[in-house]
Amino acid sequence: MLKLQLLSILFSLFFQDHFVITGRLVDHQYNPVTFYVLDIYESNQQKEQLTRLRTDTIQHQNGEFKINSLKNGHYLLEIDVPDYTGYTITVHVKDRNFSLPEIQLQPTR
Picture 1 (cartoon, rainbow, N blue to C red):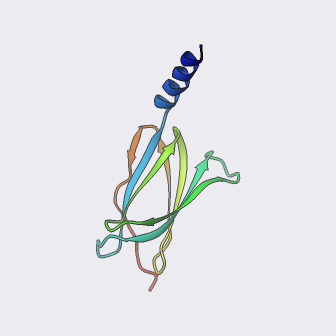
Picture 2: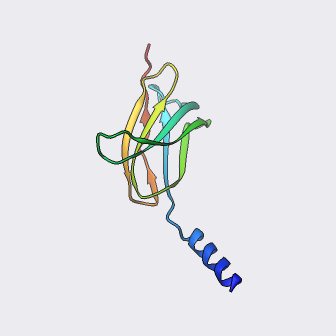
């Protein structure tokens, strides 16, 4: 009986719905942005307060990011980079692997 319960738990974890958002950040000259902060909010498509899921500090030499362990749904991503304008995008994740087009930031100076 215990083996059957353990097998059932492992099966449900393995086949649980996990969605991923990937993307890449570049500057105004198409150079990778290698350090930035990414806030991820769960969006309910209403004007109500959003629920912040997490804040990730990204350091990647190619400017790439990958947000794992999401569910099917709407999300708001806020990207903050020193000396560049902020960037906000709302996405509807319905495919397991959702790839954003390259995001180009503009300098504030």
